[in-house]
Image 1 (cartoon, rainbow, N blue to C red):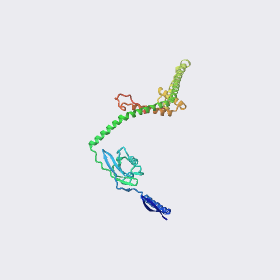
Image 2 (image 1 turned 90 degrees about the horizontal axis):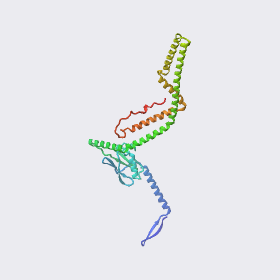
Image 3 (image 1 turned 60 degrees about the horizontal axis):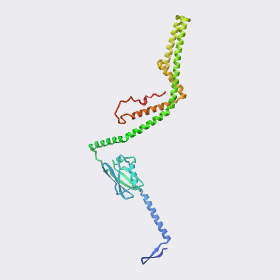
Image 4 (image 1 turned 135 degrees about the horizontal axis):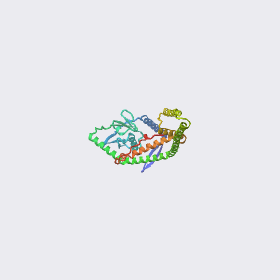
Length: 339
């Protein structure tokens, strides 16, 4: 039940009805119900609705400028974008940075397909699109771009060439120096890593060389013994008539042994070839337990590749120096691994 209260203001007495606690509770319930219905109505109408405000696009010296009405601030803001330097994702990020009240921003094509954030602005402006900010939708009309004049196209190519030369002058030399430092550091690391393997390889080569030399001298010694034996039998023990067939069969047996060597190895029986073959056999037999051949080949190939890249980087044409006669370049394919 309401109660009456008297209020004096500037000499005048007023009468005011004060509502009871039950009336206040009823009004609060009505207010909450109306607020809940209002929230429910807004949630049911969450789909984006078109608005009378528009988004316009203007070109200033070939750079697009997009005027967008910000939802929270109720004002239009101009965004200047680079056609090839900015993307749709950059444009959306600029919108959210400018207006913190933008919770959702997306761009759709006229067919209703969402435009990816990686799409560049130049591709976006080739056709009309829709911009959605929160619950508002803006239909954007891209202004037509006229054909480019031939003189303007030639001037554009000249500007591109000038910019390319300027970029080379400012950045390429620094990049080459950094690349050269990286290659030198890599080459030093590879040489440090391969140094123990090189020492083991050198020891095995010395051992194999000594063994091949011993075999050669042993062969010469056996030939000398054979010569002395035949001489003794010819002039002291028997006569030449008896020893002639013996020497013939000995010579023919030696020829058969040489041909058998060719049949087995598919190589002619020549002393340098036989020496190299015996050297490799001895080297690989010893390297099975004392040297990692696969690792050595990998490191050696990497060193050849690094040296080749370093030599190409230091070429006068790469560092803009006068051309001079160079030695024949060795490519990494010239390296013959240990097999």
